[in-house]
Image (cartoon, rainbow, N blue to C red):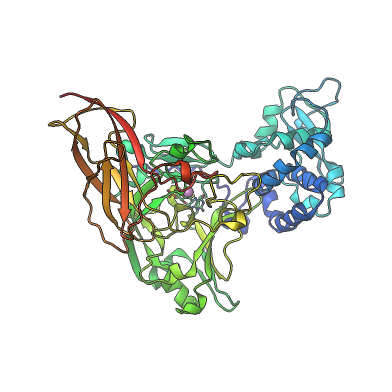
Length: 571
Ligand SMILES: Nc1nc2c(c(=O)[nH]1)N[C@H]1C(S)=C(S)[C@@H](COP(=O)(O)O)O[C@H]1N2
Ligand SMILES: [Mo]
């Protein structure tokens, strides 16, 4: 079944639109004016300011989802300051609740207070807040007024996970009144839903979150095919999906080198005609794949992926190496420690685009197969997978495969983005979220070896065939860095004895970007059995036995043996 995308006309969240003047949504317009430039000084102040200023910066940003950025980056700090914050906090009551005796304002009244001359008001549920005094005390604060005159809720429905009770309690300090009863909803309607123009998705996907959309392929379908059909391929978004209109001249890819003279600006047609196409079959896996198994050891922070945040596809595009050579990047070991940064068109509400980087040496490696892809499985990329262009970084974790690619920059430093610096890293199992220094761990690039049994499923009852348990059809093994799978081992007796599985797909030792499916038919004499699987890659790396000792607070690289329990029916 093929899904046809439906375009609903309205485009949100697209930076190419923000660049031209096609912006239609009110809050996006606000975002594009100044939000970007203020982000840095806001951050600086938050970092170096007093407790109070940090707190206030958070509140100022709360006028929109600048709060989101704040919370995300300074969450550990907020936790550390929690006690302090509580001392300072306003009257204890349910934030946003109706408070008897306070004046009542309509959503129109709130909308008429958008700047310093009128005063700056915002609403949250039934609460009306005047945050003008904060703006005045915070130089440059007016620039971060993203949602002035409206409800902050639409921003928080976007990033519900970041709605922090501490911030909500603080807002009550600025409480001036109640919103006219029945208008809470209206206030929200003043904002456009940035998720109004999402593509349609295949109903078989298991949804983890709707906004942003995150969904995985059910294990039972996952590896029925060596190449995962596009319409059931897992989807991992941080934000709403950009909608790029190639018929307008808005879309281009900016490519900049280390010195100012090095710069290229290409549209998609130019990219396709100037460079030789190159295809690569490569598996894409999210750093958080199998996180739910790790979560069972002890809760971790992140989407609860089972085994389906991975797929295998044929990607076609042009070699990034060719483009970079054209730009003037030297094919030499002088720049081995440099990086290539990628920006997507999707952005957080402070206009920070989704951005990450990879080592330049990977991009320049003629055998690294890094491509700027415009096709997936023989068809134009779908919006969910990055239309019109995404980077494909074989052997490297999914987070680096930037979708809706709009900017590439060669740099001596890694991307400064949140996703490069403060996410997608792993720590010691005892590391504590509130105290951890993210700069001490490198960003995940190549992933370790992993393997999975998809059929039968954990807890399933299965029927023996000729007295044998069939682990057939649906399982995969894969390793990062192009290391092929050389062996898959299965144990039915908790590791006392091991069987060797048969590898189904052709396997190379190196430059093996695709997964390898395997099969095993094993005799079982008992009714209940626990099946363990582990893979060995071409460097003889194998998986750790359990998730316990690789447990990390973010739940990334959950690559312990896959263990399932199955009951067997006598045949
Ligand atoms: N621009 C952009 N690129 C992105 C992301 C994103 O949110 N925005 N998510 C990343 C992550 S974490 C993963 S795992 C993969 C998922 O790719 P897919 O949705 O095509 O499966 O895209 C990566 N590229
Ligand atoms: Mo991911």
